[in-house]
Image (cartoon, rainbow, N blue to C red; front, side):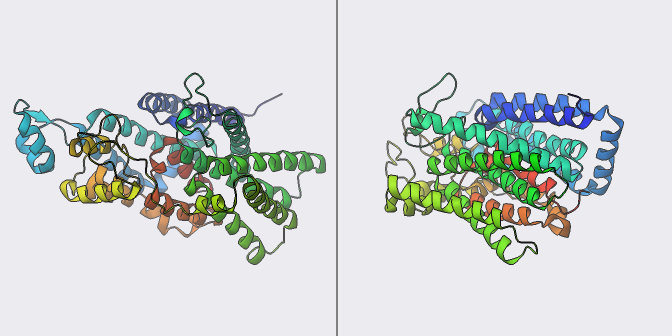
Length: 442
């Protein structure tokens, strides 16, 4: 079988993405580093192609202000991990200066409370910029977008199938996959069930978009059309089951919102009515309600969507009554101490340990509200730089397709009530979907 140049590059990108997905969504410093290396090498390979380099050049010319601001943001992350003399540290981070002064034997110290984690987070944010560049080089037609959707639907099916299989066998630890943390929910390749659920939500959107496209595309031969639709419908079933059995409240809430958004959009906004697509959506709703109603009972169904309930795992020691929202309040209370320059990307865990040093072996490594943690990590200056780099995107009317509007809603929910946006694969999917779903490729 002859593969075109675009397919070769895209398939190589899919391979890199698959490796990232299999290893906990890249949520370790080792895999953040490996992902950065793979993407950097792939980016350099893409640059050698004249057409791809021209695509990148045009993209840079059209978005040089946003890219420049993001590069300044990356420079700011480096600033957080550079050791400063204590007299300068006192200006940048008075709170950390207090701790360093108590030690009495340090003459230099960085702003970040965890310079090692901050360094790897810097690599992760560079990887996100590389993802944007790569996507603008190798995905530049609608056909390329739907090819990526098919891949994502397929890997969503594989991931959910394995997660469900692990779940049915009691989530045993297998090699590097530590599933025993969540014995009663599907996690699969991910150590966190919400990370799995949010990843599968993106796979579900990709599947829905494919099904819509197959209905609208008259150029697909009937046999291919029938077979591909059959595959995607099968993928949708397993992806939905994977989200449901994760029992992630955020994940299942987003599942409900996704189904309702697509159903309402089909009923009220599409000119050409797609009845088979509506039937698929209704079947997912019935399957969700019936399966959980029979097996888990109606109270479990209600609890799945009541994601504001405080259920943070109890922490031993002096703060044994701490709940999810107590951790969020702690993150808010510490913002004032690191208001301008932050405590460094990945520094929340050390901040928590400094304040609650009698927590035995259990601790909180996330603030359980990404917006609070990002503000704390970057400070107002870093957070402003990050937001500024995206202003052009949000001011561009072409950016507001149906999918991107849905993603903005996801973003608000996750930033407010969860910490999944710190998972590299979730960050990458948000970036890719926002880029590929502009109304016009530019």
